[in-house]
Image (cartoon, rainbow over all chains, first blue to last red):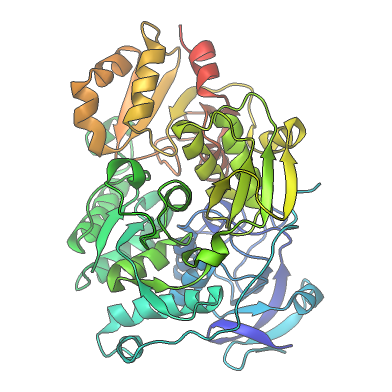
Length: 127
Length: 401
């Protein structure tokens, strides 16, 4: 599938799908890389080494630092696929060199938990 | 209706590509050093994300990412490194930090926390930030004339600036506002363009009583259902306190960066007793609390004055932390508010806020009473304590004697 590249790079890994938007600051533990918001559908899940597929980021502007901290703490997703790239997610990924792409809705909805994919955020493709 | 689904999200991106000037291209390529290259990388990424056609000048950057509790070692080291040669190009103000230096010794924070927080403070000051440590820049600084482009990261401040102060900003992130501070620029997109400021959804305020707590909950609801701008109708009693509460609630749950008042075009949804209860149930996790916190956003002089007059003679039954910007410390003292609030047992804290505070520790506190919806979300998720949401009126009635 073709995707819009927001932050360039390339990553290969298993998909982790979130139904809810993510508030990185409140919702994610920056040290462990786990979802700590018990009301979130990914509660308890580890984001590291995954291709994180989620609608968009919400909430605190400091979430960009959470993304940077996840990278620093080796607990960051390998790449992110969004339906809508918000400013917090885009800037957090840009500074952390985490590939970020935006997928069309039908392509986005076809991605499944555990599916192995390649995010080619150089050519703008998911393979 | 399930408000968790982004039902009303409408993506209206233009297909235009981001065009940079020769100077901007050169800076992006590192010709003006690594700091500016990084700043332009951020601007280009958010420009692409938001479908911007160009970068435009902004006059003022308000930065988040100041509290060591939120940015951690990664952030502290990043800023320390950055401040070795970076300088802010435009007026730059900063969000609250983790504590009030005057009273920090009473809180048992470890030495490492204090040192790293002071390092962050020094880094921002070295780069030229005004040490405001406030999430309500709109109440403590003179506002530029209407229509001025600014870059505000703190979400409640961005929403307030767009909706009340007639400024133009996107709901910036800590890094995008930092990039604006370093370059004096921001991508021209979303709420920076007049045509995108028109709401496509109206929320009809039908909940009673229409106090600051109801408006905070309405904001949290709005953030979940609205696109980048939302209209709110039936907004009686929207005073400054309720307005700040609305902005803060909206900034917590969503990516919506602006509201207008009165019925707009397009879809309409009601925010009635049922919707209010549904949002309240998500955030209200305790019957009562061990302590009270007031301020997220920080209380300005107007709210402090109101609180002092409500308290006359009464005292808090529980410990009550009151968070304010340092900028109003002198006026509070001169007008007698400090004395009155202190007499009532209030603990006034400057430069910091409820939101992401390290001063509320779940080892000592099971649950907190607050009128802040934003505070409630972060107290639960970040501090791991229970939250009892009450309006200020209720707090004064039930928690003072």
